[in-house]
Length: 305
Image (cartoon, rainbow, N blue to C red; front, side):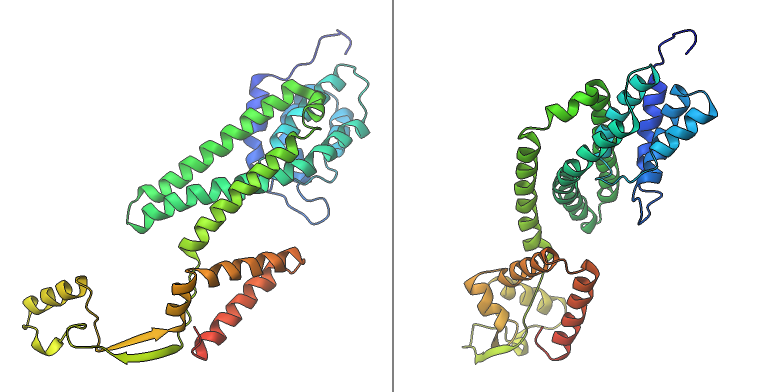
């Protein structure tokens, strides 16, 4: 920097980096995880701050090391990195190890925040609302999901990127106390509440074995032989059914009916807890999914479900 001119990232650079973060998972690999997408996001910064081929090559190499966190919580880390790189380009004594240590120190805790906030809270809420609309034939269901999710996602990424940039390396001090733990705890509680609500709505288990068959008294069921023919008969049958009459002469009680009388939805909750326990024991999600599929087919074939 012969002219001692301070190098500064422009607003256009900030916007370009922000937009590129959408593709942070576009070059996933098993060795260094998100490093390709991370480096791609920072290319506008590298071009602005470093002018020679050697400097740019060194910066690219510096940011192609291992990186992995929640894709949306990478934004504040990117913001801090932008501030550190800007200071370094202007002569501050910041080496490669300092930048990498800041990244490593932040990506673990932020990954823990991102999952319960976005995957277990925001996405299920928006998805449930949108799915309810879509199941009713409302075209606004998928449109609402797409618009709402991306507005929240992009807005969060922009705000946290700029917050990280303004705070610089001090962000690690701001979040080094109990804030991260408290945010994670609250998000986890809210996430579990949402999951509990979704279990009741979306997880359906019905045990079909017949426990008892009882012949009902006359007047407790619809006597089809005495209904008028045609539309009038259909209307009368619907009226009688709405009044509480059974469609058949026999009242069949299944195992699921008895379980519902005790604790409705018990089987669905137990199945969810079983899946959570298996995942906690490091059982592969693919194995859990295939296991549920096989068990479901077998139970259906033998008449249990």
